[in-house]
Amino acid sequence: MTPAAKAARRKAKSSRQFWLKQLHAWHWISAAVSLTAMFVFSVTGLTLNHAATIGGEPKVETAQAQLASPSLKALEAGPATAAATDAKPLPAPVADDVQRLVGVKAHGVAAEWSDAEVYVAVPGPGRDAWVSIDRATGNVEAEKTNRGWISFFNDLHKGRNTGAAWFWFIDVLAVACVVFTFTGLLLLQLHAKNRPTTWPLVGLGTAIPLIIILFFMHA
Image 1 (cartoon, rainbow, N blue to C red):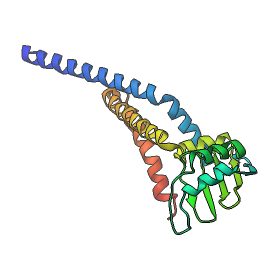
Image 2 (cartoon, one colour):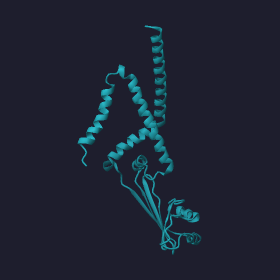
Image 3 (cartoon, rainbow, N blue to C red):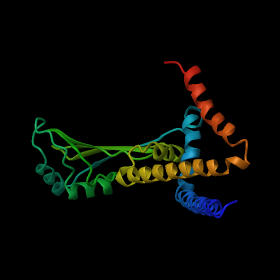
């Protein structure tokens, strides 16, 4: 082997070792970042797929109360008629009273105003709640529905009523999973020469969902 060929071989080996080290680093970092969340999303994938058999009985609580005069007067700051469509939330003193009287936290939540009542829907993961306030009498009606922990985690999986922070967390997790799978694919490429079953298994993992979609799903 000529000196030039040896130098080229050493350079190729050094380049391979560099990229192998980089891929291993990004692979384990992305795995560490997404490990717990990926486990939760995998489990909730099972619970969602079997929601009809696993789903629990929702617990519904209703409550009635009466706003004090100061809070009733604070409602006057809202739109005066049904035609004045507005999504402004309840005034802070009214929201404080609602939380204290019926246990529904409506602070900062957009409300539906009319000349007769104010209605506030407060959904959340695994739960729903609403409050209706009669603007003339101050009568408060509320309902809270709790669908249990499984429903809570299922809603986290779907991003249903989970807020902006969880919305961005799902995006970060998705990017970490993409990095994890892509670096895993490149590592498979680097090790495939010594592992002859690598690409048949990758092909099988790709073919099975395609076959199911093409032949076992009905439009």
